[in-house]
Length: 227
Picture 1: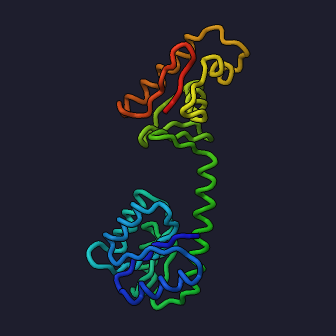
Picture 2: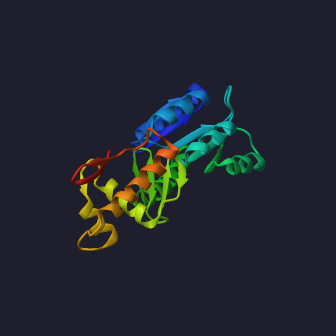
Picture 3: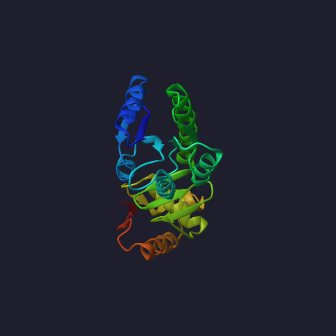
């Protein structure tokens, strides 16, 4: 069930939109101020579209768009009674995905929401296919990049492959022989010290960013595990 966040300070309009989308089979979250809307978005990871009024008390809709775009690419449908192409162009430049002028047709709003959710899910599914996240680590399979706490850290090809192998076997002990076989593509490990040195380098690079980060444990006499 698609989850929509409605940020509208007018109670009647908010409830009107909310009731319509519930009838149409959506899950909804109502917010009546910009501050509340940002709080809801930060705490509810199931939200996949925002219907956002621009004229809000306190923090404006434009400021909300800026704040959301700093942390998320969730679709934003801006709605406003402010007419003119300038308003539409401004919010689209800020990062809104679409715009509707009040008063609007709820069916048209639903079509815009559906279209943007579909696009959002497609992009996210593609990201999930190319990215692996484990604790504070993010590995991009396509670009072979490693991010520690969001910071891009250089890993050699062998270090990347070892880290990926460990993450794919998270909380399990991976033997030095298996690491050597999978990463170096050799049937037998003639020098286990080679694996140990690479593990040491991986640990060092992660710890330089965050000393309390993801731990690669040594299981003496067997191998390593990440947890």
